[in-house]
Length: 79
Image 1 (cartoon, rainbow, N blue to C red):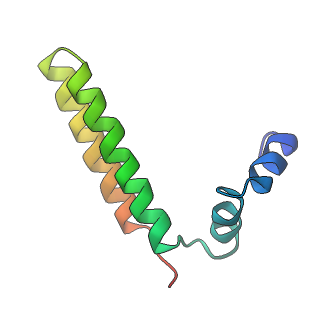
Image 2 (cartoon, rainbow, N blue to C red; image 1 turned 60 degrees about the horizontal axis):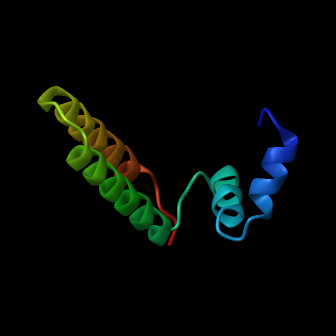
């Protein structure tokens, strides 16, 4: 929390505030939040892979997407 003003603004957002609060209190995510996060990773990385040139860059994007997806999938959920 480098900026208390930014942190307060984030907590005040209806989409982000409850997610941040839950994470800070119990270190868990709601199952729907996890699914949306993984979906967003897939969509944005797929678009990036389609838009860039170069096999190496595409491979790095694919590996990064896989690592990030595994990381998100392993985060604990709270029913």
